[in-house]
Amino acid sequence: RRELVMRELARRSYIHYLRYVHGSSWVDTAFARYVACPMKFYFASVAHLKSADELTEEVDNPMFGTILHAAMQYLYEKIEGVANPAAQLKHMLDTNEVERAVAQAINKNYLNKTDVDEKLYTGNLMLVKNIIISYIRNGIIPYDINHNNFAVEKVEEDIEWALPIGGGLEVMFGGIADRIDSMDDGNIRVVDYKTGSPHLSMDGIISLFEGQDRSRYGNILQTMIYSMVLNHTRQRNVYPALYYARNIGNDDFSPRLIDKGAKDDSGKRKRADNCEVDYATYAEEFEQNLKDKLNELFNFELPFRR
Image 1 (cartoon, rainbow, N blue to C red):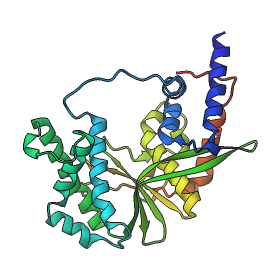
Image 2 (tube, one colour):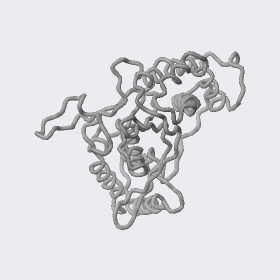
Image 3 (cartoon, rainbow, N blue to C red):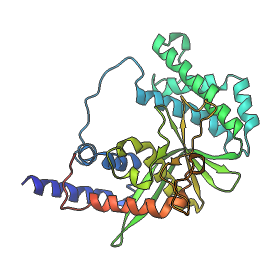
Image 4 (cartoon, rainbow, N blue to C red):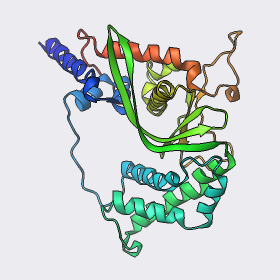
């Protein structure tokens, strides 16, 4: 009986995620959750169970990321379309634009008000404000000034694309790209801001889908999915990039993904500095693994397991 119930739940999940014709897209985080743990996916996306809300007077980790993302949107939407925007970025550092953007993000997203006197901020909120300002002033903007070979196309852009999975069926993948850059070499960079500890390397595409460590690669899987969508909708190669705010100010930091499993034509592993990931190189392998995992999910004979 339990197996029959799980198969029925799989069938319902299958129908739900194939309704792309009605504008329903698969948010990348839902798929990453399935890859990490099918049972966790079932609880969240099929049974729609939610953890109990906890009341707190402090800024938690998700809200911290929300404030950073909102502040970056306020700042970088001002330079959309500007080629090599180092001068404009330096102006932001020479003025109080960063401070204003962070305060605006806090007021709107945390305090739910448009105009709040910062003198009324709690000590914790002032600490959060100063940390985010430091991340932007000492990390993100200086990095972009020093690597000035881009123009911001869009910030917080809704993107989606339907992946054919066989049998005339398609699954729509979609999400919100933090930032899409047009690079001087003609390619696109999709930027995702992160506030946690950096995970920028994988051991081949298969490591994103299989193995005990795959749950650690959720951020990489997410930005690879965004790269896939943009590669097909813009018809340009894409550089996936993870801007880890707490580390981007380090002299040796690079936001590009690294494939530690990459090999040269002779079968030998490449040096790390020669293994930066661009989507076109991995497109066929990535999309095949994506289809395999989707067909696993939509196999009615397989229940959701831990």
